[in-house]
Image (tube, rainbow, N blue to C red; front, side, top):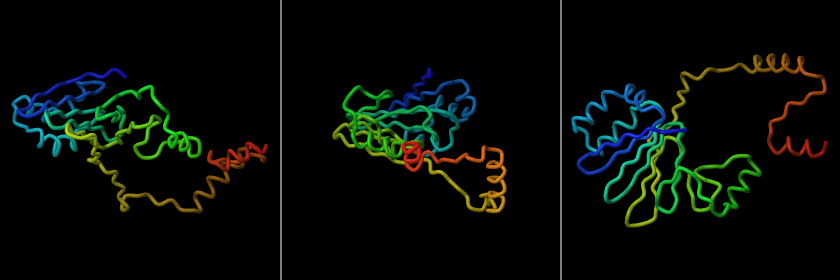
Amino acid sequence: MRLEKLEIKTNSSLISIETPCLQLFKNKNQSWFDKFERGSISSEHFTENFVKKIKGQFRIYLKNEYNETCILDRWSSIPSYSYKNKFVHELPNEELDELAAFSIFFSRRLWGNQSTISNVKKIPAGSSCTTFAENDKDVINRWHERDFDPLNKKKIEPERVRIILSKILNELDRYSLLLSGGLDTRTLLALS
């Protein structure tokens, strides 16, 4: 994916915004960009207010003399990784992480902020990762929490699910079997 980049200098830091379509991103968030151009937003105000309200795909870097921060959108549609106190966009060609290989083999996914390479952490969706100049520790903070409102959740009646499944099974061959794709599926396929 080709990214367009916008850099904004504030009094104490550099803000770099990367997005697939900068003009569309600016149009959706025009009021904030007007404030930037007037120089009326500090980097602290940016992290507290701007990031939580912007829409679209983005990866944002904040850099000052003490630390560097990478902020990803709600979906992590533009991935970024933390590696040796720096942010990288592609995985380095280094040693495979055995725990990650185990995770992929048994669950077909990587859990948490794992990556397939040792000492490389994936920055989770809706999070910011800060690296500090004086040490090699990363601090990951979640700025966006998924909100599942129980009042707006649709309740599906079990009888309705049974009716739909019976229709599906009737349309399939009578020897068909619905498989989940998990360990039970692999066991059945190995035995057949």
